[in-house]
Image 1 (spheres, rainbow, N blue to C red):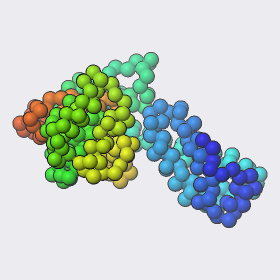
Image 2 (image 1 turned 45 degrees about the vertical axis):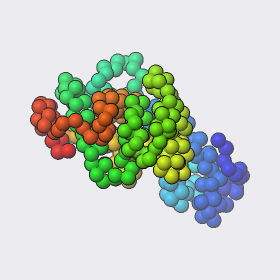
Image 3 (image 1 turned 90 degrees about the horizontal axis):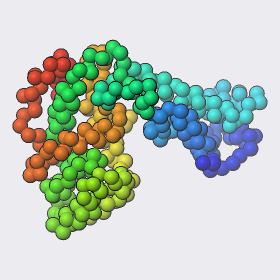
Image 4 (image 1 turned 30 degrees about the vertical axis):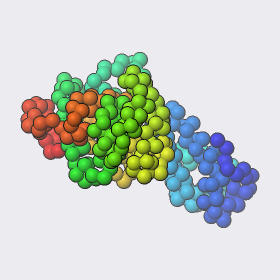
Length: 319
């Protein structure tokens, strides 16, 4: 991707001297994005979040790097503006990845408990299980059960707090996981939906073997007209996808479902980092929900089973 504007080195330096930082960012937006993407290709786990990293880099370059006297001094001493800009981008990314590594050092990827990756595994090495957390391995099924309990509680709390969008989120999570969709889900999400439209909705998704293989965006393109008609929402399929992904992963201001499901004690955190595993988790959860029961209402009282989980009696007994 090329910059929106192509300036000579002298023009870049002139803008820098005049403190026209916004103009420089606009001119170099494509160049910066290209450098970020090229850098992150060497880090498979972080590459999936390249858009988030790009935004952080752009903000840092605009507010910190360009206004720094060192940047202007480097250019005045003969460094090419773009060369020094690329160096600044790398420095920012190095700092961001070190920060992320420090934050994740105490986090165990829950998927590593379910698998035994060998040296030929395609998993990102940063998500592998640390040695001092090996005591969690023997109780994966207990942990999985506990996560189901926490997820049920999350859905209950979410409905109580955000009743207007709770059933929208539930439907979108089920679609994200390719879990079975029932008429009660459609009636709850789309008040007043006609029997014909419900039948058409389910027919467009297709039989299970077709539905399970559909791409994400294909799913959102099928369902977004129903949000326009029955919820008067003006978003696009892509916006709908971003909406549910934000609730799953969270953002800088709000925790996501994955954060809520994180199990933590004084030393370690257990967290689902793999998107496919999270989809499998939700599929298993929703598949066990009876059709006539709202998807956010767990059967029985799952809290009664909590004290039967030996490993977890000492951690996260608060829900």
